View 1 (cartoon, one colour):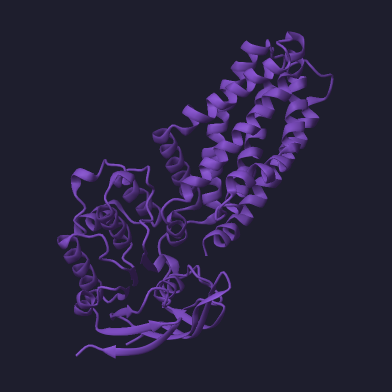
View 2: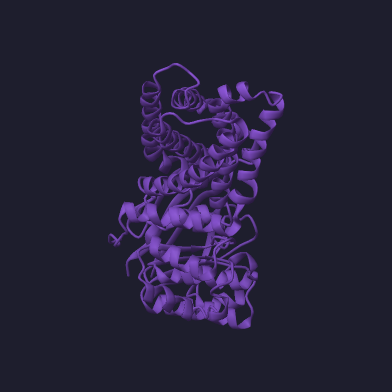
Length: 217
Length: 233
């Protein structure tokens, strides 16, 4: 299978601090990988680097065939990054956010709203401003916006945080659907038991390095 | 491995961003509830400072008008930056694949539209409060448009420059106002001619103003992507 993510001795500095201190990682096409490790280990930085949202200081990083050292912009439209923040405009309604981000990414109307349905975004919330939503509702909308773009690589940072049981199931289904469709998924999470059920491989990150990779089964 | 994705054209992206900003403004009503009253208050305070001397107010009306516009513009620019500083929206803009120059044009259009509306209200204010009169409406309107483009494009650039800064509320006016002083000077002179308060060639000042607006718009469109990257990556 093709390698979707390939990091070799990747170093990323955040304000002079080496958030990644020589990380090596490979993710193959259609694979779901769990990143586990303590707070501050570098999990989020790996996700941001793969999304083209962090500057590679040294080493090599290739994502979806794009060399991030020379062109981190080209990879962005092909990945979905869902971090701790909603990435939505608080003062726009749910429908306005879905329409804006869909139009910005050249996603047609049908695909935008099909994604919202898949993420079970409640129709009664469509005309509600995002700032009035709960954290879980925001996360569903945020994931729906990302799903509409049909990304080749999902980068999920604590995707179950703030979600109720039904929401967690929806996220699990989203991960399964993504890998079934051939996309790859990189998940940083502290909910190890839950994510291990979706992920084919678990990778431990600590001190800005990838320590070990354990395949399921 | 990645294939080029279909993209919306640059002009359509700019319109999309401008409509989004104006929709947010229409809902939050920051300009209507805060910026416009602030600018009107500044005009009234100028009147108090000059002791309601009608002749002096009429003579200085163009300068007082543009000073009020610039002070209010700082608030409007800050608001325009805040819109993109919310809950990870900067990251989302980068990931959406929007062209940076289109985002710049869209935000400049939205900010410019708000400043234009503000300027029309303030124009009514100086006519009513200061007794200002208009002798060359063409010069006045074209100057207004050129100055608004200059202020909006400069404000959008400096807003992006300070997007990631904690202290941008205080730093923004210190950086923005000096850079906008050519607009203040040229627009005041041109309006002085248009209102018959200064014997000068207003069209020459307008040409200078238009040159400034064009340069800042061009520099803004070219540098906006770098500034966005610096703020969010």
